Length: 424
Image (cartoon, rainbow, N blue to C red; front, side, top):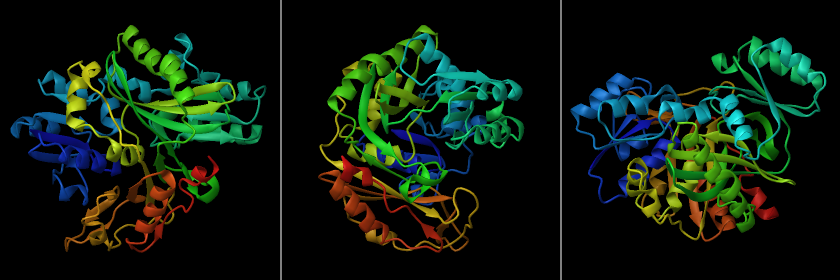
């Protein structure tokens, strides 16, 4: 089989790594890819939003199966474009990707189908939002409706902070058109857990749980980022939590989308909050999380291509999805200053330390080749250093050990990824 993966980050490197393990796969292309992906796939200089060029390339190379990694092309309708040309593609159509593309849509869906989530209101007028906040209980959460690279969520502890948040999202448009509509949501407390699932429109299969660390600095301080590290499984995702979510959240979401005429095929990422009142949905994503993919996919026993094909062909019920009885931890090596401002172009050394080590992975997120074919930093999140171990403590120790193998100027990381493991 010839495979095309669309995207350029750590998630796509994890997807390409899993695809390369399939005995059915002969050749992998990635558009646009990055310097790490280039060791496994032929990188093609086509942007993820250049749908016509991607379709033309898939036809020219007789691609058998395309996997869309990123949210922007999914929400933009790339799956519809590929399907219209008779090309086999993994991911939700545009009318289903709205589950991530619009927080207002997803909140309304949950309300209509009684799926547990935080109380909320949607606003398109900043003055109405400000008036509502005058009587709201603090702290409160403000969310830009559209895609904002995981950064369009503000937690406001005071009315003054909330008013400033309305200005940031709706008036100053810090997150662009994503802030045309804003969701104001009650503040929930509890453990956060991420659960990735495969869906074929009607059947849902649950992958292993994970837990993200969004804040830039140790102790969950600093600004929200795309994710500074992750571990899987979450010790807080118990059998009881799983049973509740399967009954009241996972299948009801799939059924709700089907009932709305928006059958969902692909990956649904459930962001959950384990509250005193039980699990509730914080957010949906319509694709693999990043860096969740980096800790979940290496633990999957199945051939990923088999599972994805079963989703596209509507026969996921025939797949016995299995994961290794172990753990994985990912620590993101970032450029100092991320997510605000940072320099690029610094040479990276130490990749050879990962060669021949089965339990260690160095997933590239923001890397590129310079004019001398040296791998250099090319983003805020540069690498995802992942390790597997018999349990979370061993995986965490190995991951942090491996972060020392890599060096580049302005290297920055959190030192408490998975610290919650010690408290479980």
